[in-house]
Length: 170
Image: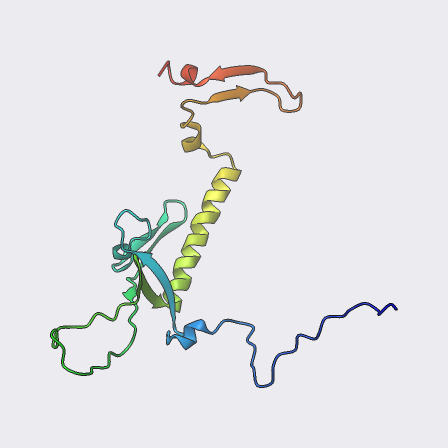
């Protein structure tokens, strides 16, 4: 008695359930669609330190040019509903969105797009410089390594140069 292959049931969406192709988490959490949100660190040692974003800053390089990016602002959770009197009543309530050591910040979509454009220009300039063998800084950092020079097609190294020879014995 052989029953044919077992076919799994259909995976249809239940009646009345709307499926979205793009996440709507920002809309549901009350984020303004005219802004871009980002998490920044409260740690001053972090490259993503929040204070760096809360004032105008310069983005760029000598090759790509420079752009003065306007300050971001702290994202707020919204209106605070006051209830019964509390001991600290009358003091300002901090509604800044935080998650552990992270703080949510925002900027307008136009400013965010300008920053992204500038970052792309910097990346392209660096890639073009490396592709054209402008490796001045990279060539100066040969401390403590073994550098070989030779013909790559032969499979053997012509001469082995030790880093102490390049740095004068240092």
